[in-house]
Image (cartoon, rainbow, N blue to C red; front, side):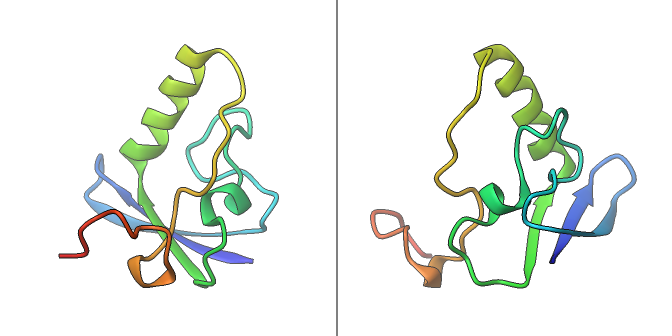
Length: 88
């Protein structure tokens, strides 16, 4: 079970959700992004995002017209996977 913190830019507040790995991320339509896909190989018990990001996912998924493979969407810099990017 993951604790998911979502910044809702409409209300200027953080929202907290508790979801299983196979459940859909908050604000995602038609289960197109599960918690497990968003988490990837991260070991963090708490994941975070913002409502606009999930809405952007919905629109891009709709425009793409099919499943979009996700390697991982959430990963903290010290967990690796960002070796070619700045950590500043």
